[in-house]
Amino acid sequence: QYLVMPLHEGFMDIPALLHLPLDLRFTVREELLSMPNVGRYIAETEQILVPGVPSVHAYRELYADIRGAVNKGDSIVVFPQGSVLGVEVAFRPGVARIAERFDLSVLPVVISGTHRVWEYPFTQTVRFGQRVAMTVLPPIEPSDVSFEKIRRVETEMKSLALRDTGAPARRFVPERDGWWDGYDFDIDPRFTDLGSRVARHRLARA
Image (cartoon, rainbow, N blue to C red):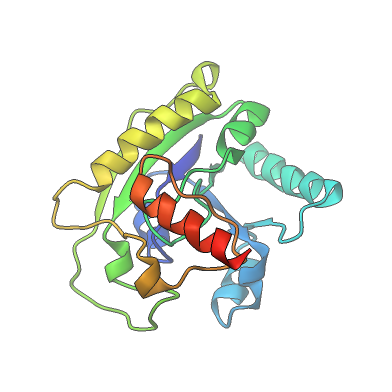
């Protein structure tokens, strides 16, 4: 039983992760409930909803849902980037908080290439015959979970994703994908050029 921590490229990450020999419950943004078909499956399979509007009550419900899934023996999937924009998007601190709160080992999973199968929301085209790579790293034991440890593993995960495996990682190119103004994300400080461009764009808008 783990807190599964995968890189995130799109909806096709889910069927890739279902190859793991674990009973998985996914944390998903509440806004996805409004999507045709996808929202219905999220509701019917009782995935864990992450509130769109943060509040004490909303997070109490979130933690109660996670506790219920953990008590049933499920492993919890949390996409630490919270975004499918690209490998450059920084991890959020929620993974360490949840792992510590529920005394779970963290299982890092490097996924790349899934964006070429279904690059939602940039295209509605599904492409068959694409190569996808998935690498499972050694788990981080509960006693070793910390923000600093997660940051170090984040670096390792992204380095693996950017290797030439025939399954290239999703890259965030604002000039192609848009700047996603009003959407909450940060650029990993290691990607200095992209971080500077995003910062300049946000400053110009402000």
